[in-house]
Length: 226
Image 1 (spheres, rainbow, N blue to C red):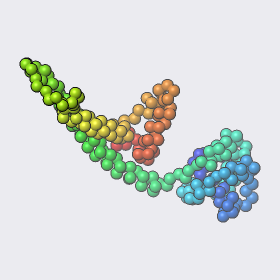
Image 2: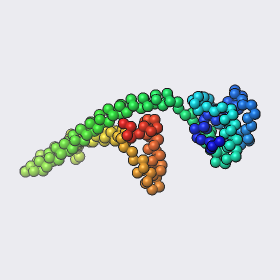
Image 3: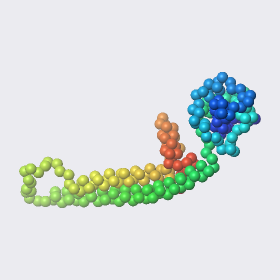
Image 4: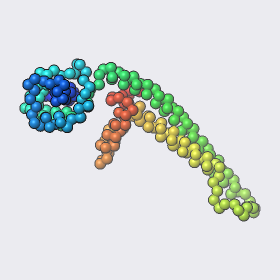
């Protein structure tokens, strides 16, 4: 037989856990001490759900896999070290449901993108108009000739309403444009390779981006799928 494949790990450990629990013991199955020790540490609930029928392993196939793993150091490392962390491969129906949910999420995110980009851009333009008008007023005030009366209790520093409006609009613009950029980065942009090339922190940065993309949608539903 060929080498053990990663997609066989979950079906294999599903059978081994049932065997260890005594719920579906396999006659003549001999577990070496190392594998028995690994099984004792495996969270049984992680392998409680049966695999897809097309991926399930028969008793004879389980014995073949374990016999090969004993003779092949590479496969032994794969089974003993990665097997306990294997996760059930999703069925075709589950993948289809995820894709459908992802398509709905993409439509919702597109609406959010245009809304966020629209009000963020409008707020940015408004902030520039407000600060420009404030500067024009300040320039006009400096051109006044002759003495100027001031109240004795007038504060030394006072924000002009246009300055307050400018600050508020800048905050709104920053929020909207940042939200639009985040959505665009998920739907249409992919800088993972560029991030990975950055010295020292590149790999961690790229991995964080991959996790963020997976959080928004199913694997493979990144840029280009919009």
